[in-house]
Amino acid sequence: MTTRNRPHDTPATADKDPRRPAVLLCALALPVLIATYALILGYWARPDSTGRQLRIDQFLTMVERGQIGSATILSADDRIVGAYGGGQRYWIDFSGGHETLFARLIGALEAAKVPTAVQPQPLKSVVGPLSTMLPVLILGDIFVILYLTSRNGTPLGGFGRAGARGVTDADQTLTFAEVAGADEAVEELREIAEYLSQPGRFAAMGAAVPKGVLLSGPPGCGKTRLARAVAGEAAVPFFSISGSDFVEMYVGVGAARIRDLFAQVRAAAPAIVFIDEIDAVGRARSTSAAGGSDEREATLNQLLVEMDGFGAECGVVVMAATNRPDILDAALLRPGRFDRRVTIDPPDHRGREAILGIHAKGKPLGPGVDLASIARSTAGFSAADLANVVNEAALLATRRSSPSIEAADLSEAVERVVSGPSRRSRILTADDRRRIAVHEAGHALVAAVQPAAAPVMKVSVLARGHAGGFTLQAAEGDRVLATRSELAARVAVLMGGWAAERTCLGEASTGSNDDLLRATDLARRMVWECGMGERFGPLAISPAGPAGDDSSPEWSEETATAIDAETRAIVDAACESALGVVSANIGLLDEMAAELVRAESLEGDALQAFLVQVRPSADAASDLALVS
Ligand code: ADP
Image (cartoon, rainbow, N blue to C red; front, side):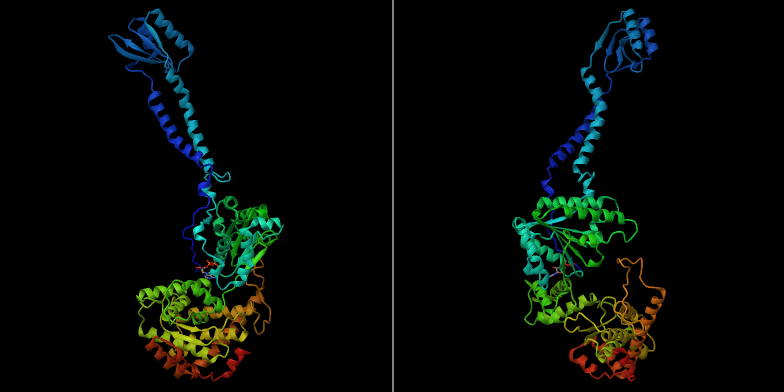
């Protein structure tokens, strides 16, 4: 849920283009040329002849008979006009004829002593050739316009334009102080900001400053924000573009965009270029033979060429963000390219508190709000999630017409962010409601009995997102590792709802679909990624092919069968354990479900009052199997 916040982005070099006056001139000339051509065709090129048209032989006969009164030769129109008979006008056209025809006509007129004059038509003799030249001029003008508006020799250059956004000074209010919970990353980037504010000083010392910094971390962890903060600290322009903007269907466009982007950035140096989702263009080359990879390769090569092309004195730093650093082309990570790598981890509880503080700044918080406790209950949230929590809470407070954001708004906002907006408007049948209550109580009971499972904080039958209800477990502290028994306990807790439905209501329902998917996925990953299978042993297999694409899995048929068997064994053990707990506590489950139906949600002491009564399963061996 990354929210981009670049409200006033403006193309940085839009009005610096020296070709602009020429383009304007040519664009104005075009209608003038076309109008002139139309006038020439319509008026000037029309011959000045009126009256009856005579055929040449008819004319010659009439001349011989003395019927022609006068003749005027129009030199440019190749016509003879005049009067005949009782003063009527005639004209003949000798343009298709030969020199001899003209001589014959003149001879006949002289012989018959017809008064003959020649009209020179000087304007027409100029306009004639012009009318043939004008189409050429018009076409030429169009080509010049296309050329001038092109970038890097690609006509209609807007097509190949980078579309990079430069942020104006007014937007660069972001500083390192406003990037909370990423202290290590900030420390690493401080040097880059110093270099950008005084590139000359570093160049004079001969210090090699990284040209490229690769920011890696999960979505919403603040990669864009960090890059913008570097630009803000150094007070330099910030150009941002997404890697996917470079990936075009048309060959050459991506590379042209890279060229264009770097041309813009060089003109604005010192500056930062931020390439989001660099993996879209920077994937390892030649791993997929599918169409489009040629274009991507050309784009990637162009990026490498550009990065090699500027020196330390240039003052350009390319920052790229990815959440898949593992699939990037090795060439991108070589010295002189993205050789500095900064990893951004999910924030710990102090970081989360600080991030909440940043986003709550300027918003009226009620006296009972304790950001530290919200931070503690949001382990695993990304910075973007936390920004969202504060925003949701503000919306909730506004909806209540409350003057300030209260603790309840924030905890509701946390729940919303965890499982999507609440769907209170949906009306459930009594049966469905009871089934959901039994299901959620099942999760809670199984979680309560597993020593390795995280404590249950809240159980609710209010619909959230796709789920009918939800059971919220607290993640204690900021765990980065999980043991086998903890993972197995998670699978068992996931199966708790299914086990409760089966035991209490006779059969399971579609309400367990999502749980089953998650349980199976978790069990399978325990086997193939973590080597936690009983018989399979500590052998980890990458789920994808060696280069990150799905084309060539690296396991054999037998291994796949073994993985399936191991996965099934883990899920079976979890089911058995969950069923054991549920049947040992069937009375309690019933009571709890009834209370849930009544109260809609249970938390705090009311919840604990149920959970302390939970007895381990009658068959304790199945629990032991899980924790072994
Ligand atoms: P990414 O680029 O990693 O996907 P963003 O930088 O776009 O993430 O951040 C997503 C959201 O989280 C933005 O609203 C941003 O303001 C907020 N955010 C990210 N990191 C922090 C931080 N360290 N402190 C405060 N807010 C943050």
